Length: 233
Image (cartoon, rainbow, N blue to C red; front, side, top):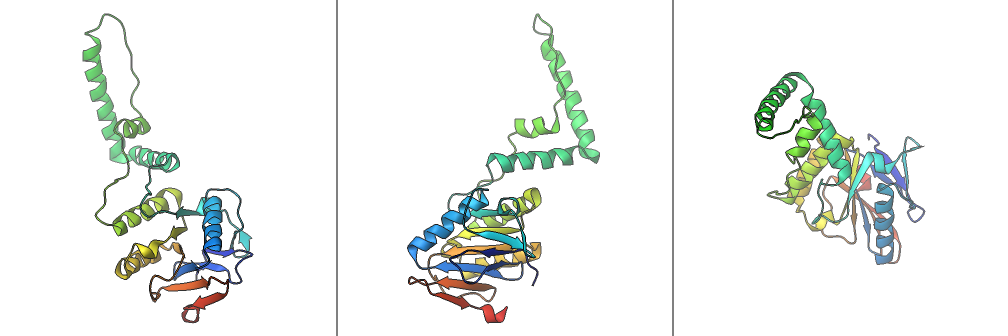
């Protein structure tokens, strides 16, 4: 199995294993421990302190650089400043290549001609600069789509964007199995396997039986640890 990351915690006997070949679930039925795990993971995925250790081939990795976490499947998007900066840089790089660069030059020439005509109508001298690719995308308010037919469509767009722009290797989702049916889950799993990225799902209880692609560490309310589907991996 190709290892993307192993995640250790002092409250877990078994490490979480993230790969593109199976989906790792951590089902924590103890409410206090569930809150602790979600809070610490959320902090560490933002570069803050927490109790998890992330390793690949026994070497530490930075989760905030390699992964992303969605704590609320009802309220997430790609509109934060860091991702938008990456998007504008990527689009600007594309705009500086080949035919796109020539078309931008034509746009700047047309803008210069328009401004020249307008400037003649005022009794003072004005000048202008050519518009850069970055300024072009900002001025046109280029942004990620916010309306989707389904949650699955939105999740795939989100994952694709962060693979392309941030080179993410894994994604952490909280309570995802509560809002996706098995058919949509399998579609998401297939997509991530094709893109060779890993998934970690945190759940507070068993919503239903595991899919073939899933394996789970279950922490019961009295803190017993049970492994499910591990014999198949």
